[in-house]
Length: 384
Image (cartoon, rainbow, N blue to C red; front, side, top):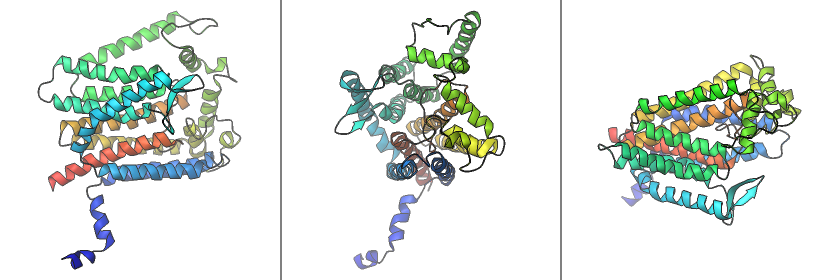
């Protein structure tokens, strides 16, 4: 018997690990990875080892995805509370004795420098999915209130650092879990409508809102500056409005077909700030044009819709809520990044998934994909 097992081809031992992997999801990621490598090669051509490092980060994310995909969703559920408490504990540690850079206290030195807020992008939806799984069949308004409090604690700590971009992403994924758990539209739509009306009235009746010397008590100075820059980037074209203006010039100059691979003048003449990170969408748009943008958006939509389909087919409440939150995480990343580069949202420092350079964000994406693969895999194994 042992001799027979020893004659099994190595591939026959490895292939079962891929059983149940979601093919359409993997295909969508493959398209985005190819787009990311092409764009990084061009945007980072004279930017040190960015292309090689980006490829390495993708391999690390792929390895993390493969490992997490082997973990049963029920096993993931047991990690929810410890990971959430660990992440919140690290955020408290950052507030007490974190490392400050450029006016923000977001990092912690534990032998290596880490950014604990990144952990909450996964820990937060895990925790809320665990909470609503435990309350299955007996949900009350109080349960949604507790879920909201579980969400507000890390979001408040992250905003205090301050890190508006990460806090918005954690808030978006957390709210998506609460909504998918059964929160009524009647409790969601009215506050949003009132907020839009209030903001519109303030902007209309206060034309000098961004005048010199005016300060908003509810926001920090840098947050006020970002909103004012969004409303009128031309007010400081060589300063705070430079990023948005150059991003929009690059997107517009690409036209329908784009200038061609490695032919982007705004990119290679270094007019686009952060062209390999937050503003890489501008570099992509310049070289691949509107057609390339449409294909990129379709790839993201395919990824998000496939993730939602995995959520709908999930066998448990925990899996369904978690997969839905991961889908919304991808949507939030892509929507906010493209929106800020295009000048329709404030600049908040959110990377474009699989396209922007960044090791920590890539690890988070790998974890999210691994969770989706794990849920899809468990569904197929249950059916078989």
